[in-house]
Length: 403
Length: 210
Image (cartoon, rainbow over all chains, first blue to last red; front, side):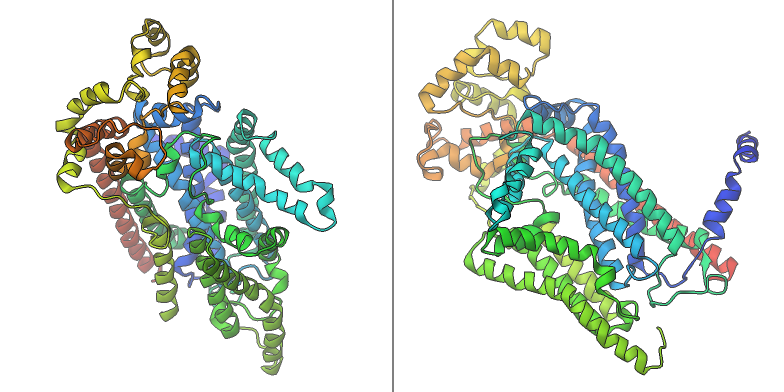
């Protein structure tokens, strides 16, 4: 019966032809390594966030008087299994960003941003940027102390522009801050605004960008760990079943780790301070953004001048976007590029160190270390044109042989 | 291979520090004698008694709204019953603070601020802090307006903490169910992962792609 129904639909929708052309005839390099699975893991994480988010909106109330109770009483205690949905959503946001970071670093390592994949990289960067904004808007919704004061600090960051020599007089920073908050203080307007952005606008933009990103991955093809383009007819393997089963197994492993945290270790994803209702008159002892923003936060606070700090952390984001144009070497993949590999290690260590430093008090020693690792992070990006010039020399000396 | 091991190790260490145990971050630690910690943990045996002790010693100033326990002045107010019929036992915060504003402001006049609702306080502060603070408020938070009601009564304090824990956390039976659900989910995913991996090997062998 089901088979007949399937055939009936297929005769009309031609789904098997679509499957054949898009999944079986589509060929990819055989030597894709484990880190290539971070892309599909990010997609799974996105789906989890959308589904769990839909259920949460059924009980969450975007009202400053009700938000905290709707999360901590209605959702966590009153409605059956909603505790699970909330824990999945809270841990899911962190896992989503973690796999996106791993996906970005994999892309950098294998130089997946190089021709013909520049546009894939740029759209990927836009996804990352919108994702950070989505996470930021969602963080305010539980209306706990961390939510509230985290946003107070974040909304103050743009005011750094106003300490700039000439443009400071225009008070652009204050305007941005006011626009973010919807007024002079964080209150009902801010919560309503962030709720709307978090559940409608930003996820829709994300869906669109993810769709374009996936199309571009198909259009330009998946990069190769060896850094060379394969002859898909001779060397490639069918996407299904080769990759679907392999990455399917990885995704199961990913979900097993994810659910371990959901069921047994939620203390980081639902921090203790956020069980305290938001109170504008009680400043918590330690306010810091979530871990996925800490590297930028450390760059910002390590630089003594407020405006320069603001410029530096924004510049690090822009440099990430410009990566395909900073690195114009003819060689691809860190496997074939010893100088690039060294600088990649500098980037990884600096990014991690800046994140960890963000969790520590801003002592003079930590500020110095912050400056050191900020320099490490920028050194990676700024060394790329130099490495590219050197590698062009090697490339030409080898008679133009691309590897 | 060395590179793969290096990047895996550094990533695992990073996420361990950030998500599990950040030994670089500043944390305030409080000690609690083992016999009292045991009482505070044992919700099944002590939560009921802890609630009675709470009503006798804390309810004059503190509410536990998630357990429909309100400050004594409100509890004695006939309006409470009417409101609970309309809104349910756990009153919405704005309704509670609006209708009983006078009672809450009277407390503010005495203490400088409205003493906090303790529904989620166990989750915020943890048993060790609550134990030390309740026993000797001035020692833990100099200048606080919290009176030393429980000084010299560690066992009763631990029982009150057990009550607050029972309000904040799921019941022991519910916790066991959640553990079982977690183990079952993880086991299912691991088994599915292994089966997919084996299936992949079998199919690829047949396709000559192994």
